[in-house]
Length: 292
Image (tube, rainbow, N blue to C red; front, side):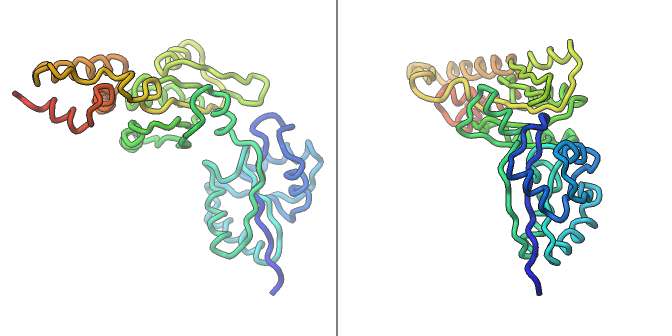
């Protein structure tokens, strides 16, 4: 049996056609086949660089049939480059499924470095880059979306989401309702002529798009839980040891009410109030339900 081929993961520009590596261009020219999310999009890139390699489509709606065919070609010794419409294949697209199939079949998978909207948006956001979580697109169904946001509410990491312009306002409102009125950045049309970074609180961004129709693909970068005030004795009011249980409960309720007025959900308001007072969420909850 002959040597099997290699599956190359080739990042493509997220806007500006010059944002592609020399190595990626070399691979795209040398492989036997390019598997593209949308051949109509990829052919523009190939024509720009005069690349004549044959194209085949591989996308969400044909991956079950097309995936095994591509694996068969790799097993025959063909080298294939996988590309998405923009950025690094395998991130929020069906490329991850082809990679799994290739690994299961013992095919070598070679990733190339290159453009990724998630990283470009993060590093230019001005929010913390020390720890972050990429969440892709939030679920469209309200119940599933609310469940995901409840899981993310206490996460201290910077959160990153993708969203289409026709859904951006709805998503921003869902984030505000589920996570509170946090600082956020919208990265729009990155690397293109009308590149823009819109910064503010979620409420301010919602107002912005109420006044100006959103256009272009967008990345939302959102500060993590407690990003403004890290817990600690120096910035936490804590408990006054002279306070009675009733006074402590009243103080806790006052902080929670203030958080809710600022846009926090009830659960998030409770977590943040407990953090400010230097007690656990469970302690705060027990105090709230105590009728004495």
